[in-house]
Image (cartoon, rainbow, N blue to C red; front, side):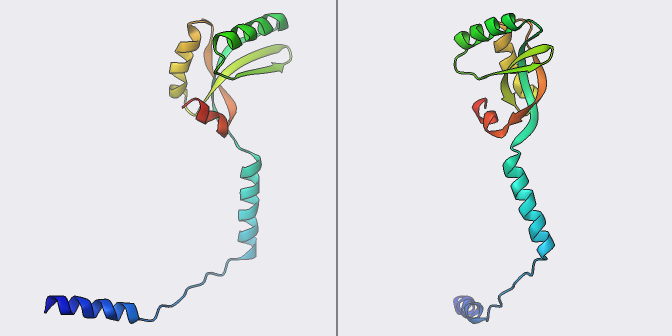
Length: 130
């Protein structure tokens, strides 16, 4: 009896008419979503953390340190930036300061003055340091 009841309910549910639902989206909302998508495609950076290897006003010193870094850690990218009068050397790309600390300890073995700084990072870079 129980099996027959289950089969009957199953057949009734299969034959019930299904109603299609449609959602009418306001054109202003569609445009806002399109602008949101385009903005996020163009701006794929987030506020994150890097390890600053060096900051100095001496260009020759920063270039020498950059060569040492590239020879010692060829697998890591180095970011070189000049904000007059300072030259910055940074490496790493982390979403949290805590996740940057193991990399900081590695860098401090060779560059004792290294420290963690906040920076704009590309989302693609974050994956390299996970």
